Length: 391
View 1 (cartoon, one colour):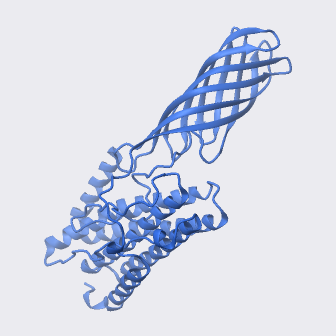
View 2 (cartoon, rainbow, N blue to C red):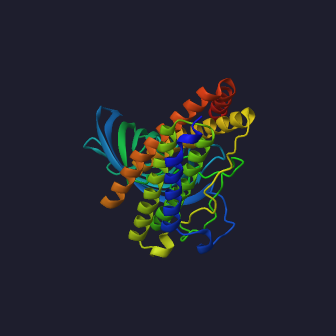
């Protein structure tokens, strides 16, 4: 056990807690509400344009090119499962102008509908149906289209029945950052939150109850403010982890790494609050709120208590650390491609790099706990992995 070797770590922990108390607001200074949990469904209207090029076949093999404008009425949902991807379904009117070689120009009017099963990879599909009018021959046909989507790219087959015109090609959807069906509609996720979640003494995740400054989820200032709050609560979470590691007799290196992660989260919260101020919030509104209690009940009086503590360390380090922090790192890295300003991109890149380190720390803690606790801890981890796969 390392009970006599944690003096420096305890002093460092106390200094971090004191610094957080000075830098961040307290609950007494904030407006508290019994707000709703993160939204699970939202309806949005998304206009988009697709520019496509490919080859046509039918009477002869020629090039094809065109442009398609559409308005999609989309319902984006988050299934109530751990780490579940966003799902999108929707449809709307569409107007196309398509060239088949030099002699055939077709105007298409109709509708389109699509679905996306994975917003992180941007995988989706879209179907089209409508009427096709050949401008040069004044003839009418039936248009159908089938498209597979990967992010802003789509591979599609367009057919103009009765006109004997068919085309296979690739297209690019604009605007790039927020394209529909294969793209993301900004909702709070059930997995990739920015920072490690705070849990109570029983291990139940504590939802943030601080009133949002803005209600529009697409408002950049409100998003940065929400990220700052999540990072601030992650400070308390990593201090709790350090407490639990010391109580369980973990190596000093793991305790130091947990305290370093808490210091990272202090920096993340300050950076996100600064970006919220850049986006228009006042200093008072942008300031995140520190949780009331930065301690964690981790008293170990016997072998049974230590086994339970190791199981909790291992399972939480797997879900909140390895998986959740890893997903948060991927989210921050992906957000750098959304067209933010240079200062915001630098903030996101730094957060992504440090969240990846936190994910590795989660794996290290879970591995140590499984080794120290033996079969009961390894069995608990195996059960958790199976449950996550089933979800």
